Amino acid sequence: MPAPLFILLLIAAGIIVPATTGSFGLTVFALAVILISNPIIRIIRKNRYFGSEQFQTLKAELASVVAEHNEVVEYVEEIRTNGSFEIGSSSTGQHAHLASFENTSSWNYRRDRNVADYAPHVHNASLQVVRNASADPIKYLMKYFSIRADQDTLADVQRVADDICRLEEAVANVKVREEDITAKINPPAFILKHYRQEFWDQVGAHLSPIKVPYPQYIFQYTSAGGNSGQTTAVELTAPTLEALSATLVDKIRWAKSAAGQRALMTNKLRGQIKERDNYLCLNCGVSQAVEPHLLLEVDHIMPVAKGGLSVPENLQTLCWKCNRSKGVKVVA
Image (cartoon, rainbow, N blue to C red; front, side, top):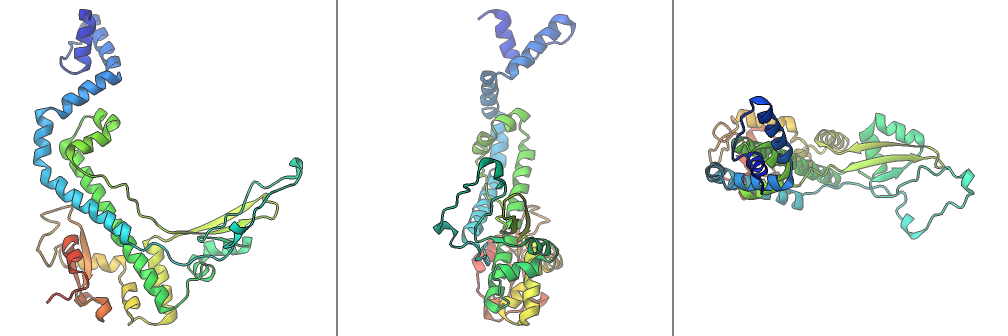
């Protein structure tokens, strides 16, 4: 290999640093920058970085942090697997799959740019219903997706609300942990750009691909000729589910039922209890003051299933590990 090319490769790999004074030095530096983008050079630099003493030292120092992160990732997957994220359905087009449709009009008369969808979460309706649903989503959600004002439905809604709330907090916690690990190791930009997955594999951290699966219910209008269409989408986020729960409780007036008590467990109340308990797990004593990324949850001391109420004196802050191990047990 010619000497000048060999020197450029060394510069590109970061083994030697060129002097940039003078036209020759600037030329060498410019060529080195171009070579850095070469995939072969990137692989050399990547291998040098992962094999460096600095990276291995930081990896060892963060081993316990990574282990805790992986446990939370497994907890997120557990919530997603065991959670409930479905309520109600529309009956429009429930048998559409039994027929086939074909537009046989001549080409110059065809206007079927909008085609109706048929699915449990899609309600095909008039234009007026679609517009009314955008103004009063809870009312129309209940009316057209068979969400009845009874105790069983309230229990289903609250199960979905609880699972989404827990999953939201857990997913956000994992993201913050990943950002913290990245900041502490502070890898070169090209590592995160080109070798992000390998970086996490080297660190030993498991990444969670899970996102919160907010159920979405759609009111859809499609004109007879398919020339126009409008939709209103209602996504069951935590605020929407809280509004739906409150509406159901008001209609059935069973606030003392188990489902009614779960409906009273709003995000606002959860935040108040955590603040009251100084963001401390009342079982094991660990706190966010010591562990900033600690995942905390609010638990009923006397479980709702056994008659417990959603009142401050029956609520406590627990870390996710203590809450998972407690289940529906009453802790003296």
